[in-house]
Image (cartoon, rainbow over all chains, first blue to last red; front, side, top):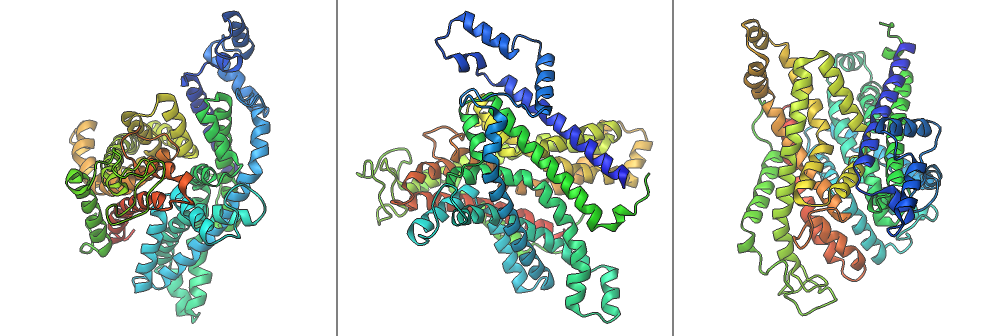
Amino acid sequence: MLVYLARRIVFGAVVLLGTSLITFFIAFVIPADPAVAMAGAKADPQTLATIRHELGLDQPLYVQYGRYLDRALHGDLGRSYIRRQSVTALIASRFPATAILALSAMVVSLILGVIMGAIAAVWHDRPIDHVLLLLSLALVSMPVFWLGTMLLIAGGLYLRDFPLGGFDGARSLVLPTITLALGSAGYYSRILHTNLVDALGQDYVRTARGKGLSPARTTFKHAMANALLPLVTLAGLDLAGLLSGVVLTETVFDWPGIGRLAAEAIFNLDVPLIMGTVLFAAFLIVAANLAVDLLYLWLDPRIRLEQAP
Amino acid sequence: MTPRRRINWMELTGGLMVAGLIAVALLAPLLAPHDPTRAVAPTYGNPGPPSAAFPLGTDELGRDVLSRIIYGARISLTVGIAAVLVTLAIGVTIGLGAGFFGGATDFLLMRFTDVMLTLPGLLLAMALVTVLGPSLLTILIVIGLVSWTQIARVVRAESLTLSQRDFVIAARALGAPPRHLIVRHLLPNVMPIIVVMAALGTSGTLLLDAGLSFLGLGVPPPAPSWGRMIEEATIYFRTAPWLATFPGLAIFYAVLGFNLLGYGYLRRRGR
């Protein structure tokens, strides 16, 4: 068990190291000259050279990367060129809005997905299964930003109780959450359907039925327990996809979160902010996957009892 | 590997939808009632609602929305399919390499895949397109670079099991070089799954391209792209909701068609 944990943590660290290399590479390729960005286009060469020296841009690449990594490990992601604020502080101020949106979307999509998937699996190959199948594929096929725009239109015309933009209380959360959640809900329902149909055909389910347990009990207690497990992993992995959706949803609804911060940074070629937000997103995903691994220890006794190799 | 049942309703519907889309793209000049890039309605500055002359309305420049959507099918299909080819080229190479050679190669390639999986694809694509400048070629390459991970994993898993099959082991024992084993024995057998991943991948690249266009990072104007039509329509969402509605329905239709095709095949094979 300890070996399992240690392996997962080392793995997460390696992934983050790889991510930092990729973001550093992107920043290096970006044509914007940070010195010019800071001092303005009319600055004289002397000033530019001074700024470059101060930023360490005259050092060899591996030294720059080493410094960047060292500072990132200490929570210092540099300063935004455009906003002239610490990247860490900017991310910290925007994170709550994104966290609330992402979490509520994840909860809604899991609940919807599990209900749809369970109904489809119990009535496998009946009409309701096919209807739900089509519905889930329709949800997966909708462009997030279009769904958001449609909800804005509907909101402007019919649902006047819901604010059309910005983050202002629980009501403002409703439309962005629906926008972000529906796609994942369709995806989760497909996965749960497959897993549950598979689990219902297993020997242990047949045994449970054979010893006289009711169909409902075997389905929800025995088969569901095993069908839900892979969904936990997927929800963790899917955070990467969810964060992509966050960028679009936040743009549509003018949501003051990290997604919009990142989009702004990219349009302004604000290199430290781009690196910071991408690295932070990767950190979130690695952390979520680690949390999933920990959850597995509790959910799946097979791992807990596994002998160290 | 052989399909268990005959073609199901999902594959049939999806296939018809995709065929319809391809037909619209090919026959765009015949089908479109107007020139998609020219002002044909005298409604400068104000979008016009759907009418008998313009069934889907006109945009703020007086251009016919229906014609723009019809021509947009060309852009979207080109980007969607070409980007999937780039994605497949990267994903299949990495997946086959990892699955066939195993060991250290497999370990390194798969850890690299894991790193790519933790990066939010859209953010990475946005950063890359901004750096390289939006053009058709850039967008194809960038979409390929951020979407190959799924395909690589699936192809690796398939070729890993295939490498242990008797016919591969026999060929190897007879002294067949790696190139022969990969091209002659592995590739034909992973082909069915590659075709499925191509269909599902196209729905992914269509959505990614639409998202990039919506953020202003798609194929540059004046080519009518569905994603950008929605982006341009957002400021009129109160006064002219049809402007954002119809291009979105077009994206939805195209993505759903490819998804039905891919998932239908997977379901037939009992996955």
